[in-house]
Length: 307
Length: 275
Image (cartoon, rainbow over all chains, first blue to last red; front, side, top):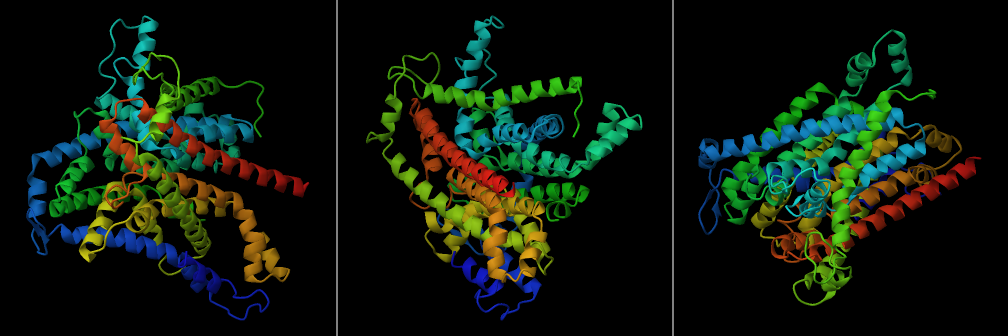
């Protein structure tokens, strides 16, 4: 708090009675307003990232870590078959979940923005989608256990309906359960940005496309999707990075069948093997950064967000 | 707007999808709320063996759950602090970003990067830093910092959305009428932004209150509620875990509900004033 208050006061004239005694240039005002954010992000995000970049070259043994410039951590990481396996497994989850959340997110956003007629109804439905996002992810994850389990609610319901005569085993503690939980946790990250993009489309454009003889499908492909690609890209980035960075869901829901990049990394951290953990972290950061940069080439997110 | 007499078939298909999605979203959560009222003899799955508040009482009973109430208190305190700081810092930053200024691109992309950074790595980096400097990690130092790297970008982007709908003419009118910069902020800009600011306060509170991955490596020796819950998952196989889940979700709902009620009241009052 003590960081922001002086900035605010300096930025906006010091006393209401003596107006405009202190004139700061608009750019300086902006700098002072954004300053606290910049300080926090540099001190607690950029600097720690630099620290594990540096530590990734360190030497280590069972008692501590030692400043050095070794490439061994990276060599071991990049030549280990486990690394490739983890990345392939996480990428597989990421693509499946991306596909499902994109389908769900786009259709639901479209329904909310275009089909729902009253503002109140739209707000209510959007809130219904958003509220679970503001509750605990851990609880939402374990909530699937009594639902999907062998004697769980879903199996019981299917048995009662005589659709199956033995409980389905693949539902829980399987890659299936991991995907279901991801979709449950992350679909909102797709709905939000896409709904935001769709709501900016002028309805007259859709009318014009129809008047010009475009079918529903053509209007969708030629008009709507190009105009909502910022939302699609933003949602994709969020879902993709969440899945790649997850370690809790895979650990809880796969029943030990799958590991994720970060869960393997957490094991190294628990063993206090900080330099190899740092090297794994750097590799993941680079990987995620490249993917995000690739998606940001498609759209100028900044232009879209900051008017 | 578009008032067609008949809905196209896509409406019905999408309404169906929406309904199924909401069932998917709330179904499993409802199951654990119901199971948390399981009778004392019951287990972690259906059928219900009677109903009771036994598992809720279990939370407060000394023993395995001893840390839960204390951790809950710490979580509320930390979330309040995170929420306050996020509002102050991101509202100021949102205003600053309305102009181009040197370094604006850098800060913007730092915020994006901070948002997409794998969560555990943020805590790992901060933890390493604290270790290198010989500092002791703590809830209100390193954990607070780690959570801010998550709530601040969220707050900033929320403020962008708020400012996108903000009409600067009101500010200009205030200046033309002789308001000082401070008066303009206090009596014009902030009141107009208030619903958005409440949204940021609520959002950052709940994000912090439920945060696990960024906090786990830097919380020091006193746990937050999500960390306690995480520790319980592997050890506890009784409906107590569901009872804790029901309580913590109820707290989230209370925060969300209060904020929504406040925002709706504000907007009603505003609409009434305009009439």
